[in-house]
Length: 425
Image (cartoon, rainbow, N blue to C red; front, side, top):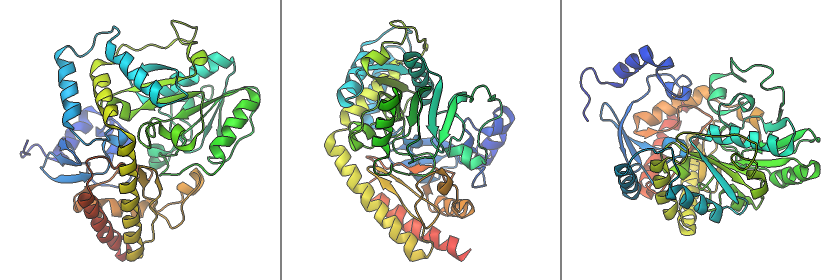
C-alpha cells in the first residue's frame, strides 16, 4: 500500500494522538527516548518491514521477539489461514490446545502441566498467584531491571520502557499492592525467609539490555528456594524457545518450579502460558482453589501459529542461529571499536544486544549508567540507513531465520557508519 498525502508517518501519528494515549498502544513505540516521529508499519516480509511511506527497513525488532521465523512465514500464514477458516474463537476446548501443551511439556523438563493465557503479563501474574496459593505465603522476590509485565505487584523496578521513561514504578500502583514485593539486585542471590512464596527471575535479563546470569546465580536461587520452601519461577516470555529447544532451563541446566512463556509460542500472535510441576499446577481451578480464567485463552489462531512455529525449531535450527548471532555480534563489536565509540554487543545463545557503554553491566544499576543520548543519535543513524532497532537503549536485538548473513553484514556496515556519526557529533 503506497502512502498518500494524508497517509504519512507524521499524519498518522498526529491522528493517533487524538484517539490513543500518546499515539501508541505501548509506551516505547512513541519514540520518546530517541526523539522524532515513529514509523507506522504498513507491511512486513521476512526480515523486513515497510512503513506507510514505503520505506523499507531491516527489522531487528521482530515484534520484540515474538517472531523468530521472519514476518509472514508461509508455514505460519498457512496454519493461521486454515485455522481462521474454521472460526477465530470458540470459548471451548480445542485439540490444538492439547497439542501445544504436549509440545511444550515434551520440550521443557520442568513443565508437567501447562495453562494457556493471552499475554506474558497474564502468565506472570497467574504464576505469582499460583505460587502464593500453593505455599500459603505472601512475599514475592523479584530483581531490579527484570520486567514481568505490567501487573501491579511486579511492575516495580521493571526495566525496559520504564527505564526509558525514567520512572521506577507507576502511578496507580498503591503501596499496598507492592507491600509484599521484595526487589533484589540481579546476579546476587538474596537471603530468603519462610514468608517468601516465590522468587521470580528472568534467567537471562533482556529488559535492561542483555545481561546473562553470573556463574552460580541461577543455581544459587534454586538452592535458596529449596532451603526455605519457596518456589522458583522462571520468566521465559523472551527466552522460551528463543535461546534453545528447552529455553533457558535447558541452556543452564537449572530446573524451576514454574515457568512463564509468551512470544515465540504464539508464532507472532497474542499468547501466553504458564506451567510447572503437576502438584503445583493442580492448585489451578477447576482442579484446585487458585482461580484464573480467560475468554481468549488457547485461541485457535494463536495455537495454530505456535504449533507451526515450534515444529520448525529443531536443535539444528538453534545451533545455526546461535552461530550466526555470534558472528554478527563479533562484526558489530569490531565496527564499534573501529569507530572509536567502544560500545559493547553482548550475546547469550541466540540473543544479542547493544550496550551504549564501554563495560558490560551485570545488574540494573550498571545498565542504566549508559549513554542514552548517544543511543538516540545512533538509532536515527541506523534508521536513515534502513535498519530498524528498538527505540530505546534497554531492549535487545532479535535475529531469526530470515536474517541472512548478507542482511546482517549490511547491519554491521550501517553500524560502523552510524557509530562514526555519533563519535563525530
